[in-house]
Image (tube, rainbow, N blue to C red; front, side, top):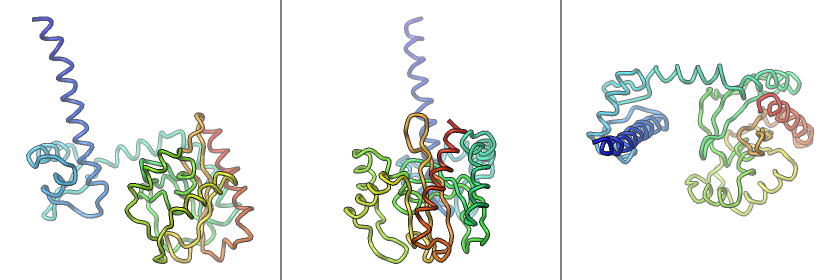
Length: 259
């Protein structure tokens, strides 16, 4: 009987882990959507049975992590607790805040910090510059890795990871409608690695420009990026090398404080 009990424990643990993974899959489906989703659509996107999805949603709704109305399910207010805990306890954010303040003050541009998450980057912090941007980029917004500051992170992928990233990339279009060319992109990533910063003009938002540098952790991995953004008139081509050096210094200061 004792042996049977021991065998049952790993099986129970495996089942619990699978349930946890499924719940996270459901939350990620809702997180990726900008509108409420029906039960059947959530199940389809998560690759789960409808009955299983309904049970998971019931638990998450009871805990405030999911909300439901006539239009379907969406992320719940309870998720703010976890986000707040991260924003107030992250060593990376604690290290970055004063650096972003100094960067925005010194350059007059909006300074931002991004963290890589899978094939995306997430806005963690922003400090406005002298001229407010004409668009809002909320904390927690998910952005691509092949545009803007994302290139500073993509440039530090190893060849195998970069191939995998490009293979899954389904949107190769820039803000002006032009298509991202693979060879040109790879050549640009090589240049970014060599000079230590990236620059973009009108890639994600027409009329806007940015310069970014990777924040490298103690293991030599580029896990985050720091960026300044402004109108193209505020970042003329001749100013980019100066800003690139400024961004590299800021990235190094963040890394030293955080890691």
